Length: 86
Image 1: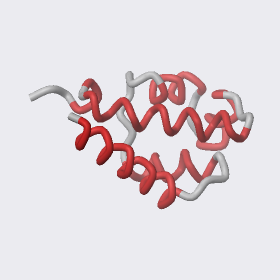
Image 2 (image 1 turned 180 degrees about the horizontal axis):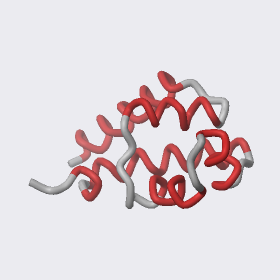
Image 3 (image 1 turned 180 degrees about the vertical axis):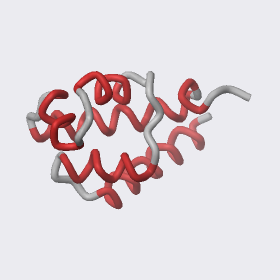
């Protein structure tokens, strides 16, 4: 079985996270500081080098001023679209 980080479906999540960060104009460094993490850690999440767990997902989205439930719903909708297109 393929590691989830390399699965095609996982590509959606880092893209959503990156879009949320860019929407607010935060740098990776500023977001990392808000999360108590390094800019490198944020970069690794956004480039699929680091898997993100649910708790950290919520911290990430809240740190950019977003609603984790809304972003998760967006992720699920995109995942469903991708799976129905396949």
